[in-house]
Length: 233
Image (cartoon, rainbow, N blue to C red; front, side, top):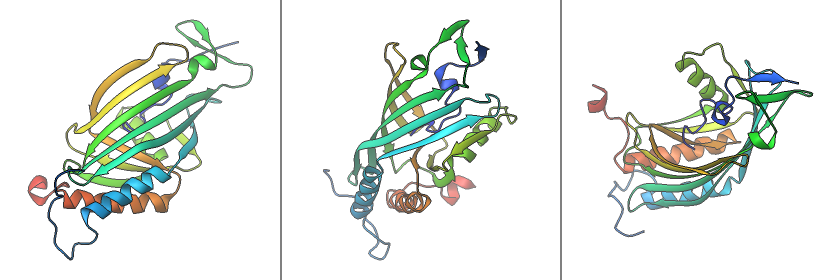
């Protein structure tokens, strides 16, 4: 999931400020003692991402008391191609907002309903293990709070329930290719093609996230990705 989790899920709904109202070629070569083959590693990644099913969580923000943003995400159509060192995924993300009892939300002075605040996004991602430089597993809550701090809003804190673990893929340039089709409420769908320096996947289970991350690091190394000493110095 690009952005993928998400500097400000609620801001993506347009709610700021708020007003309360009433296979092919052979894979790259590798040493015999370097662990599982690239083909086996990519197959493991494909299977584990496909097995995930829907991952859901509730998120609140300190500057929007009583508002709960609920996210439901599922990865499908996973294909990990060892011939090209490329991972293809489709991710469906549903978002809803729970408002405080007896409160309305206004956007541009107009009262909006819960349906107006519902979002649906289908994201198609292309990820090359040749271009990934770093892979980590972090708590989604920490990722969100760091994003607000980097955006000069350290006063905004996020709480994510239950704990969700984000497998974060990073690069120093925008190498991740993403196509999104997004709708909000009854508005027309918006299509976008973007690139990003960060991509990733949400897991409900930390152990699974770490196992997939370990496999992805192995695939990255076999494919020639990662930050080398030459890159660092």
